[in-house]
Image 1 (cartoon, helix red, strand yellow):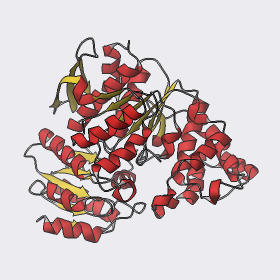
Image 2 (cartoon, helix red, strand yellow):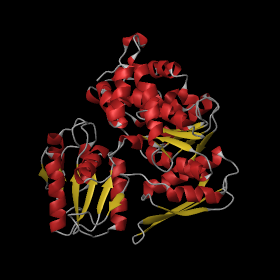
Image 3 (cartoon, rainbow, N blue to C red):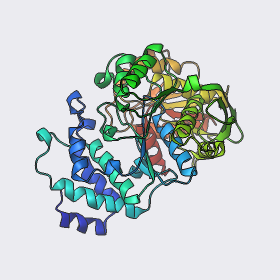
Amino acid sequence: MHFTSVEFYSIIIYMNAIEVFQDWLDDYLNFEHNPKKDIFWLDTIDFLCKRFNNPQDYAPCVHVAGSKGKGSVSKMIASIISEAGYSVGLYSSPHITDFRERITNANGFFEEEIYEKAIKELVPNIESIINLPADRPITWFELVTLYAFLCFRQAKVDWSVFEVGLGGRLDTTNVLRPKLCCITPIELEHTEFLGDTLEKIAAEKAGIIKNCTPVVISRQQTEAVKIVFREKAITRHAPYYFVDELISKATYSFNEHTKRMKVHYESEIFNRPIETEMKLLGKMQAQNAAMAAIAARKLFPNLDESIIEKGLAKATLPGRFEIIEKLKGYENIPFIILDGAHTCNSISLTLDTFNKLYDNKKANLLFACAADKDIKDISRLFKYRFHKVFLTIPGTIKHSNLNQAEECFKEAGLQFSSNKDYKNMIKMALEESAKDNTLLLVTGSFYLLAEFKKLLGLY
C-alpha cells in the first residue's frame, strides 16, 4: 500500500491513523515472512536516521539487550526514571493487542496527536525515497524503530529506554548512543541468526556495548558467557557491573491474596536496602528488578532509594504472568494466567511461579509456539502438572510446526487435544476449564496471547 503525500493526508483525515499506518507497514513484512541471515545490517537505519535529522539522538537513552527479561527490565527502568520526575519514552516488543504498546511513555500511551504527527512525518518521506543503500529493501522493524525515534522527538521526552529486537550487534536499535546499557540473561535462541552456542549469542548481544559507556549485566548461565561480556567491555573501555556481584542479599516472596511479590535487595551501592511490593511476579522478575535498581543508581548516583522502590512497584507489562479473574462468560475459571514465555528456561521459571502461587491446584494448559523454539525440552516441563493440555499454533504471523509439537508432547508422555484452528482451541480450553472449575495457563508465545486477547475482547 503506497501513497503520495496528498493521498496519505486525505486518508488519515477519515480513518484511524494508526490503522492506516499498520496497513502501510504490512508491505514491509519481509523478514517476518521470509527470515534470512543477510537481512541484518545497520546501513539502512543509519541512512534513514540521517534523512530524518538523527531523531535517535534527541534524548539520552538506555539500551537493553538479552534473551529473557529485557522487556521487563526496560519497563522497570522507564518507571523509575519517570518516578524521578522525567518524561520517558519506552520502546519494546512485541505488542499484544495494540500496536502502540511498542511505543509508549512510562505510564501508557502518548496522546494520539504524537502518533499522528510522527506518522505524517514518516510515511511521505519514506515514499519519496528512490535509492536505498545497495538497493536493499527496508524492513518492517527498521520502520517501526524509526517511528519510535520520531514519536519520542515529537513528544519531547527527557529520556528514552530501548529494548533490542533481535541480537544486538546488528539490531536496528544499535544506532543509539546510550548513557547506559543493560544485558539480561543469555539463552539459546534464534540460533540460525545469532549462533549455536551461548558464547556466540553472547558475542552478538555484547555488540551493544559502546566505548566508555557503563553496562550492567545480569546473572548468566556460565562463566564463559560472563567472560565474553567482560572482555568486550574491557576492549571498549566500558565500566561493567555484574548484578550478582553487586547484590549481597536478595529475597522475594509471593502474596497469594494481593497477587504481588515482595522483593528485598542489599548492596553497597545503596544507602539502605531496597524493599518494595511489585505487580510483576516471579523469580525472573525479582532478578530483573535488581538489575533495574542498579541501572537506575548508576544513571543517577544520588537517586533516593524510595524513588527506585516506587518505580519498581508501579511497573506492569501485559503478558508477563498476567492474572485474569472472573472472565465474562467463563466465571467458573478461578484464574487465567497469560505468560509469553517461549524458551525452555523462561517457561521453567513461569511454572515455578505458577506452582508457588497455585501449588496442587488443578490446572489446564493452552500452549503454542513458533517453529524455532526448543519444543522437545519445553514439552517435558509440562509432564505431571496439567489435567488437560490443548495444543495449537500461535496465530498466522509466526511460522509454527504443530506436527513437531505433537510428536514432542507424545514423546514426553502427555495426552492432549490439538488443532491448527487456534480460535477453536482457545474456546475449547476455556470451555473445558470452566466446566471443571480449573485454572488455565496460556503460554508459549506472545502471539498466542495476542490471539487469546483479541478473541475475547481483552484490551
